[in-house]
Figure 1 (tube, one colour):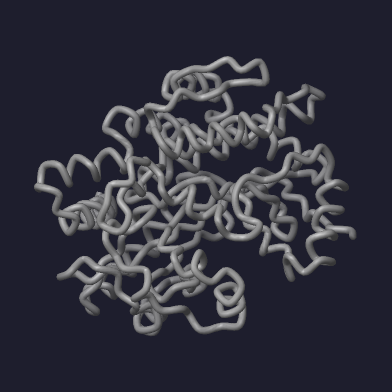
Figure 2: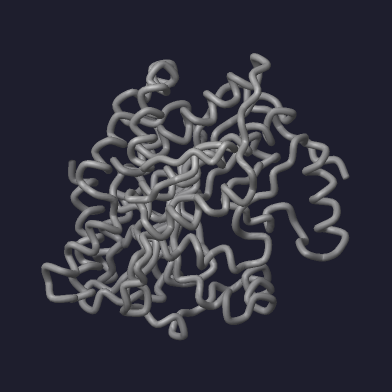
Length: 377
C-alpha cells in the first residue's frame, strides 16, 4: 500500500485543544455540545475552528495553519474569547483538564454519527469510559522519508511532555495516585498508545496495509498512537499531552514540541543518527511520567542512564534555544520553566483539593478559573 506524505515546505504549526463542558453550578459534566454549537457558530470569526468530539460533553477548538507559536496562541485566544459569552448564556464553563474529578461515565451521551457509534460498538466498556481530554500539536515536515526518524526521536522526550501537561490525577472521586490517569486510560483503545518504531516510511505503509486488510482500522485516522504521522497534512502529530487550562501553558508545550521536531528533522537531514531507546524503555518512561509527573526519574538512552525529568528538561531547553530563536518562540519555550516552578496542573489540582477539605467541586472551579484568567490577560 502506498501512502503519500504531503510535504510541508516550512515547519508549520497546528493545535487541537479538547475542552469539557461543565455546568456552572454543579461543576458536573454537561451533555450540551449540540446546544453549544448552535449558539457558537454565528459568534465565531472562523466557525471551522470548533469541532465536535465523541461525547456531547466535549468540544475541540483548533487553529488554522500557523507559522509561529504566537500566531497559534492568538488564534486560540480569538476563538475562546468568542466562546466564553456563549458558555455564559447557557450556564456553562469550559474545563481544560485531562479528566474530570467526579463525573459519572455512565451518564455521558454519545455524539450522533456512524463513526462514533461504530467506535463504541467495538470498544464497549473502555470506549464509554473515555472521559478524557488532551492537546494535539501538529508540526509540518518537508520530507516523508524522515518522518519515522522524527517520530522515534520524539519518543525520547515523551515523559517530559507528559509530565509537564499531566492534569488528570483524580478519577471517579478518588485521587488515583497518578499525575496522568488519562495517559493510561486512553491506551486501552485499539490502536491507541505508544507507536511502533519503524525505521522507514515503507515499513509504516506495510503496517497500515496489514491493519486495513485485517479490519483493525477502516481509515488511517483510526491509528490513534500518542505520536503519529498525518500524511494528508504533511505533519507529525504529537498526542501525548493531557488537557491544559491556560493559553500560556499550551503555548509553552507547543513551542517545546515544535522545537523538538525541527531539531530532530534538521539533525536527520544533516545525516546525524538520532538515538532511539528500546521499546521497553519508552514504555517504562510513559508509565513513570504518568505515575510521578515532574518527580519522575526517567530513562535517558539505550545505555539505561537515568535522571530526574525536570533536570533533563532544563538541559533540553538550553540546547533548543537556537532552534527557538529561529522559530521565533523563545519566550514561549522559556515559559516551560514556569510550569516547573509553579507546578503542573495535577499538582495545582491536588493543592486545591487539600486546602478545601477534599472538595472536588472546588477543583473543577479552579481549573475553569485558570482558563478564564488566561483569556483576560
